[in-house]
Length: 325
Ligand SMILES: NC(=O)c1ccc[n+]([C@@H]2O[C@H](COP(=O)([O-])OP(=O)(O)OC[C@H]3O[C@@H](n4cnc5c(N)ncnc54)[C@H](O)[C@@H]3O)[C@@H](O)[C@H]2O)c1
Image 1: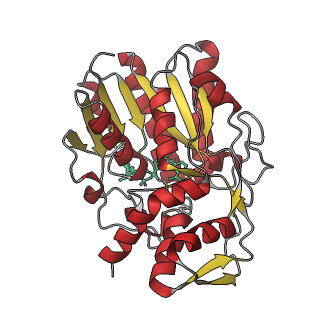
Image 2: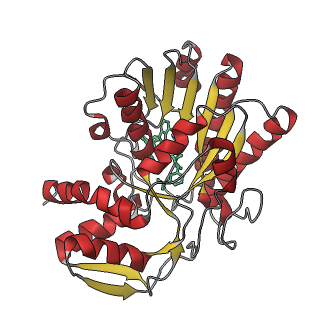
Image 3: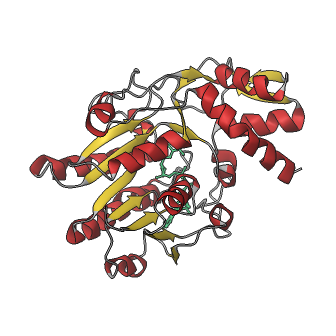
């Protein structure tokens, strides 16, 4: 394959920075460009930062960085001047608790359409992050095209990205637009997501710090937890796709929060679990990715069961704990 130019929006965030390092390590001749607005001093009413990118995710990155906002036309105009092959569009308001519907729709849906137009003009592949949030609380296993009933504005904005994509692919299925519905991703470089990081990290850090963790009653809610290395595999396979499509990216198995606790205990030793009332009116209680589409079309095969992913992640969790002691 010829040396390629890859743009990663949201490259200072969790998944985007992992992608950037994957390319740097495995395709050293590729030209990798990150486009991210990084974080400023602003917070949402919840206290969470309005964007979660962090320079520390990029220590050691040797590619190019464009600091910009996908909502700002003059910032994204810079991308029009670049001759690129693939755009991985990861930038978004990824915090599912944000209630500002206008801002979420602008950032996640409208800005995506602007970036998609740039890709189409350049004949470049668009591989974008959708989400299991598109399914809301409909019954699992979650299948593309059914049970798409988001319960919050985040899930709705991601569904609108997919619906816009479907309209285009309906007329021209060969166009290289791939939507990846990530389920609950955990792994290295998510630390700076703070309270929006995965429960694997949050519970691991709580266990190390307090020897006690808090879980919503009674820890049996199930999610499809997927390790970052499997997510990166799905992203890389997508760049080789010969047609467009929307795919689930998960482990293919629903596992409970108590399963996370048991896996953590096997590495960190015993700790106490306190079950507390769930304050959220919306909470996904059972997700499981149906992987038939992505297996058949892209050859995706998840490599990490929850226990394997946690085993691989433990050294990083311990290192982060030591750092913030
Ligand atoms: N992590 C998960 O479990 C998960 C699950 C489903 C979907 N997703 C989606 O995957 C993508 C990546 O998720 P993540 O976990 O890495 O999130 P993240 O918040 O760590 O990364 C998002 C990045 O986008 C940047 N960004 C936000 N608004 C921007 C703007 N207006 N202009 C430019 N940059 C902006 C942030 O600074 C951040 O670096 C997101 O689209 C998210 O919605 C993630």
